[in-house]
Image 1 (tube, rainbow, N blue to C red):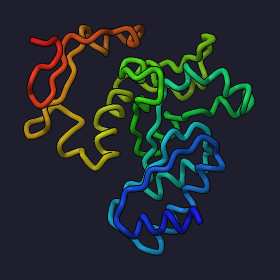
Image 2: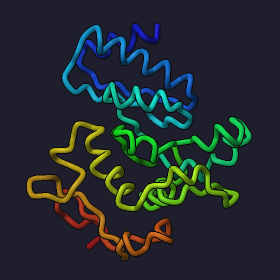
Image 3: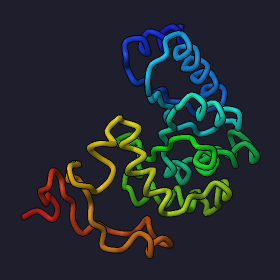
Image 4: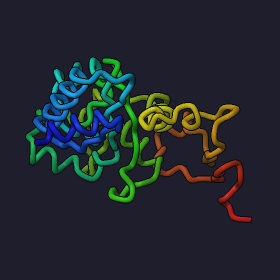
Length: 214
């Protein structure tokens, strides 16, 4: 039934986004995407897996081959990382949200906050989660999966725009794109060690300053 539903949505031209936490769920979704795309090849469907908390190395290869985008939330490591160790075991939990593996293997990556569901919805916390991967107890979960600040910023901006088929109008500051941006009080490249606490100086939407008001 699930694969039939994916095939139906794929055939209508929709971009499909499925929420997955465990590796079996991710494998099922990849099976469904692959079957639908083989039966009805479409140019650049950009189907997505949301969250992708635990996945296998084989799934990473298949994501790349199928052009599947991973849309994930590194701040969840702080919220749920300690629980994942208890739930999945230490070894499997070290593979939670394998951002480094995905990027190094050519998987398209989009970072976000999962707002309004997640409690840590600021981009600063998303970046801190991607760069440092801290848990609530102070551990670093999967240190080999840490991203650089440049990689994290790119995945949170241009990567997120690409995941929505909107890279021509969003995701970077360029002539012709929407003037939606935030100005920080510190350079994120020099404030990496406390990126989660950096504050905003100004927010611009549609070319108009909306914060600070007036």
